[in-house]
Image (cartoon, rainbow, N blue to C red):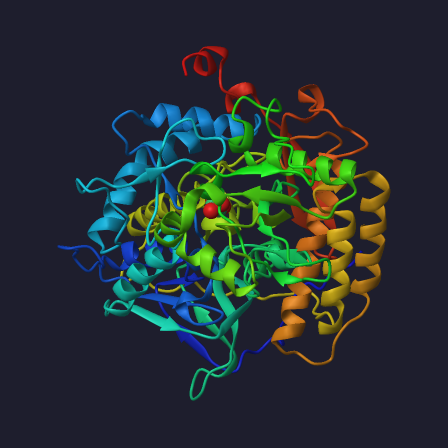
Length: 566
Ligand code: SIN
């Protein structure tokens, strides 16, 4: 299939210059921006680098603010980074990059303390210690939370207010990233944007910079039903592919086991019922009231996410139902009100009182464990281009992200990207010379979005097989022929969804095994002999997706001694 290669007429309407442009305003983007500018923390010293944050909606609209459960780090007295590492490696089913996980768990506690210094108000015990809870796959209480179940919203509030108070950071809202423009030496030297603003920076223009950081969040809108907000259309991942960057392990899309089931016709963003609800003692039952997670895994209802999602799907098939139930009646009114106020409000708004009623839940698309491939400094395979947060594949998640490791990843690797940029870019240095962009152009019709999402949910969801993947590929191919003459946000988003979905299907078809979040019905077993490695995806100049298998090693699996040590 020939995917569109460039989303813009060759001459942008306006061009502005900065030192570093950060695309995206969740925890990853804002942490990176604050660190590069030298702002936010008590005693911060401005670095002199100009930072421009561009974001598709308003600053606080991305996925971060929807995060409920919390942020994982070895903060408790009985916990250690090594134990956090073991749980992360086990969840990642052999495909984590051990060095990346080591960075995450070692630097995580300090990064969370820094968030506290920045003004984030985490929940605390009566003695003033951080309250820590547990989620699937964790053997210790290590999830810090805020506002009960409003952790992401509180972190985002603190970061946004720090950014708005920082003179070194300029913000452009309602700016959709279109593409990355090359430098004369083959790196990336500018982003093109479509700004729906008023005044000078309106319409299509470009920001030139010495470094570009993509922190554009997830790809959840490739599916009909997802916990991701409507802005999660994979814009950064698609732009990176078009710019020649490697995208890794995109087949590992995590389906959250307990998304509130609102009927079979519900679509778009669906409400999450945090894993922390099970962490505090709730459990799953089927229609007959049977606790089906017992006996399936040593952690039962708190098994890693892929294990629980698969068990729910199996039980739904066996019982011919469209959802299972979560029983959290034992919490009583007070615990629901204090510990899970956001979820309680949502449940009551749809007529469910969780103190007396069971909660209908089913898996839905939640998180892309893969993304733009980076090294430990957040550098992609293209010079001058960095990636961070859900848009990136740093190697910490492997085949299945451990719960609440994502906010932490954004924090830790955002700090690392900033360090790398501060070490390599001087405030007064000239901007790189831009090269000539010779790629072909094209843009998909906005009308393809719904069909694309339904096809992806039908054939590339939790359960996959060769026939379904071939069907999805052929539908995507047909959709890629439906081009638009009307370049507006919806068409650009549809183009990005098409690019990301095509790459995801190519990887899912190539990986003939079942591992983590990738479940092939026709290859039901994990196959370390053939598949203990990564799938790297590239978009060729003629718009074709190529997959390369990169053999891995055993280092992403916990050793026998590590597992036994628990
Ligand atoms: C949840 O609260 O269950 C989601 C946490 C996560 O995705 O890490």
